Amino acid sequence: MNKLLPSPEVLRKILRYEPETGNLFWRERSEELFSSAGYGGAEAEAARWNARFAGKPAMIESNSGYKRGRIFGVRIRAHRVIWAMQTGGWPEAEIDHINCDASDNRWANLRGATASENAQNRRRPRNNKSGYKGVSWDAQRGLWIASITARIGVFEDIEEAASAYAKASAMLHGQFARTE
View 1: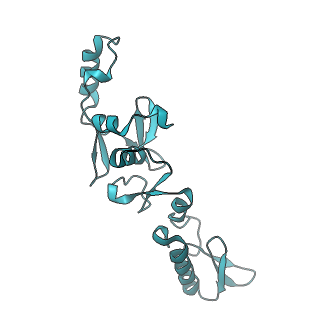
View 2 (view 1 turned 180 degrees about the horizontal axis):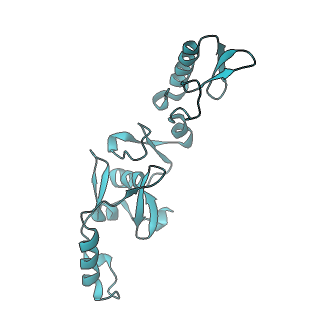
View 3 (view 1 turned 180 degrees about the vertical axis):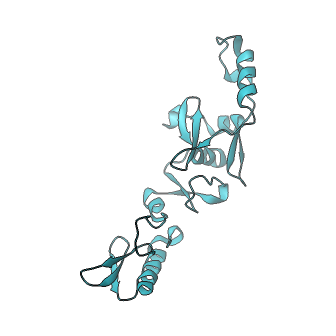
């Protein structure tokens, strides 16, 4: 995929990134980025493109919450473009949104992560009935179960089960631990 994408240097020429807001905007493009074979030549192509896009947001929010768009015909998520622009290289693994908000592309909210680390930083599932991440009710035993990838223990008290999960999550997942 990286072979189809522009270099971080080219990204910086065509996009403006605001690290404090996480927004990307199209920059004005020079005629060198357009084919002279187009209608009216490269100068006219550049003028048309700039009139339509320059200064406007480069990415839009998708149904999944991620901001994404196209760069030279290739679909890409904004956080990956931002990573390339800020670090000078396309990400080799995943990019984690620290606060779990896929549309929040502020530089302070992005970090490199493995697939496992990214999964550890997920919020509590919507169908969770206990109200605590990693805690479920064992109706057969009449006890609360706390588990991460293995069962941590069984508890009569839900708060005790949630506390056990939080401690194990902090120990196993470090900065990627999430208890909500």
